[in-house]
Image 1 (tube, helix red, strand yellow):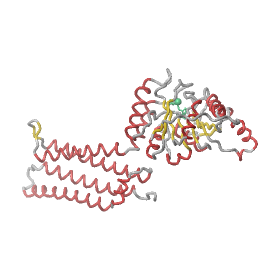
Image 2 (tube, rainbow, N blue to C red):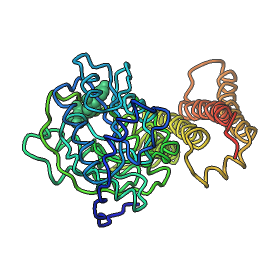
Image 3 (spheres, rainbow, N blue to C red):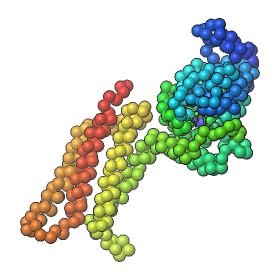
Image 4 (cartoon, rainbow, N blue to C red):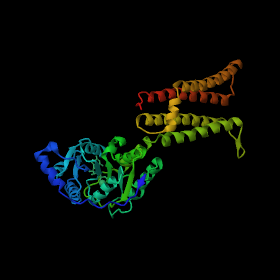
Length: 408
Ligand SMILES: Nc1nc2c(ncn2[C@@H]2O[C@H](COP(=O)(O)OP(=O)(O)O)[C@@H](O)[C@H]2O)c(=O)[nH]1
Ligand SMILES: [Mg+2]
């Protein structure tokens, strides 16, 4: 659900949280009070930007009376970024294994605030927006997204990303996950720390940004979004448009077995079955009657379609049993499904195919092993055997995916 709410007035500053915590870190680190906000910044070789990022984040929070800390998740920088961040007043955590997602997960683990504000270390985002993110969370949002698309400053985003990469990927995500989020890759966003277990984020790279939106949609988190500006970047971009773009697409597909397998599987199987039925019925189109070659094509489609349907069911069951997806219809079916149902169905279809094949074989033997003109029935028999075996073994796989299902 997308909320567009007016933003509350800034908090009145009462004391400098930064100064207090810096003093306490030196004299009584065990009693450091917990801040309201943790600004978490992933950092890979951003020596030219990181000091200004940390300083501005701390200043804005101080100016607005927001108790806050800055956590810099250093991703193995070799340009001294980590030391610069620390000297500027940030808590620095080290994640030597490269990856935007890995860096964020390390940063989240160290963050102590109830609210986490995520922002790149490249000076593309206005730290003055921090209070707006806080107000949205105060007003009940669980995930707050920035939307850069209406205010991209000249030179801030390459043409390809602006008109192709971002709209296509965000549109695809909206279509597959019915999320209202317009700019799924915005690097400035905020999340309640208590919502993190529900999101259960795992991605290593840039696709982390999409994973957050997908998981928020699946977990039905309260999401809000507001427009922010995007400025040209300081320093070199770490984005690899094709590699990172593909990682987003891959993730969107992996979380959606319906789109990946079930829909194409159903279509392909239906076309295959209809084609086969049309050949057996002697149907003709524009004066052409379709015979054996068309039947082989139909059989192939039916076999492939059945396989995809099996993959789709397995993917869905895995998502329900192990990824926390909610799907009441499927859960009811799982409760009713017995492995034996699938085995009986698969065996039945296979036996039908074997019997048909056996009849053809018997005729061939009776004709003295001479020439045989039973191609159509033979193709049907082979198709039934393959489909039956697919159903039989897919039933086992479905049961394997239901083993050790989390209780409750
Ligand atoms: N791409 C990338 N960015 C990382 C990594 N580790 C940390 N980062 C930081 O993640 C942020 C996003 O990268 P950026 O180049 O701004 O990508 P863009 O905003 O998509 O153009 C920056 O603050 C980087 O320093 C990493 O392994 N890969
Ligand atoms: Mg950036």
